[in-house]
Amino acid sequence: MAQKFLLIFLTITLSALSTLNVIAQPLFPAILIFGDSIVDTGNNNFIVSILSPNRADHPPYGKDFPTHKPTGRFSNGKLVPDLLAETLGLKESVPPFLDLGLLDKDLITGVNFGSAGSGFDDLTSVSTRGISMTKQVEYFKKYIQKIGMIVGEKKAKEIIKKALVVINAGTNDFVINYYDLPTRTLQYNITGYQDFVLNRVQSFIEELHELGCRTMIVSGLPPIGCLPIQMTARFELPKARKCLDDQNSDAKSYNQKLKKLLPHTQASFTGTRILYADIYTPFMDLVTNSEDNGFKVIDRGCCGTGYIETGSLCNVLTPTCKNASEFMFWDSAHPTEAVYQYVHDYLVEELGPQLIDGPKVSVSE
Image (tube, rainbow, N blue to C red; front, side):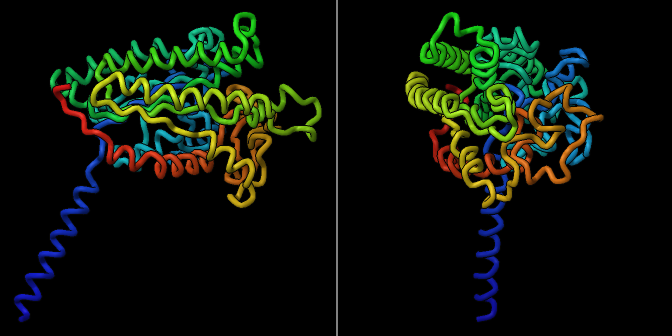
């Protein structure tokens, strides 16, 4: 009887350990990131002058990062791509592709091509001197060649086809080209410009598919009108600050169009998953229920006055708040790590089942 009980116990234990081992295996061999400052982990450190407003490689940026040093991330700590890479069991953070010190293991498990100031509209990057989305694709081609030299061409193709691709851009297009510097308003009304940007989104996805990507997450816009920098541009008196309903409405209508576009795009490619990441909802949840989520300040950043400071204006001489976790924004345009964690948790809950249960991708496709 004792031997029978021991046999049953060992069988159950081994079965449990086997299950844990399966779960511990990463769902994806690599993670690849494209986009703007919300996902940029430091590429701009290598491509623009030290006086550029689109660099975050100086204190107080990175204050709450594990190393407590600035890395180029526009936040006090980690970004959603870093948190996602951890959740997927791939690595602790996603390094910038332009860092020449990357090891082979860093490359084959995924890198970041994002650049602060970038957008789907190439004109956006002209004014910010960021890496355009077009240029990010060119860097991606170089990345494919690099990992091909490390693991061989066949294995490189397999990594790309099974990698998780995250695309986050568009905010700068509207903020820089339409609202604050109304360059595109001479050509388009808001509906026309939304359609223009969405056309660029589709072209970008098609380019990545052509290069072998099969699983993509495409983020919508956040509530742009709730960014402190946008409030500052609209309101003269600090006490009058509030979210801009018109810009938030524009963001919501853009997101609805993107949400409809992605299934149609996916349908044109066999064996492909293209998922919509709703970042508007969790952001607005924090705005409307800030105190319930531990945030005391939602209309300005932790750095300096919080009204205009970002990039070079948020620097070692700029005072910061005592507790960044009580602020929704680290500077006037970028959230704190606490917000990124909240958004990450929301997206994992929303998209996790779709990623696990979605169609399998074969290497031969």
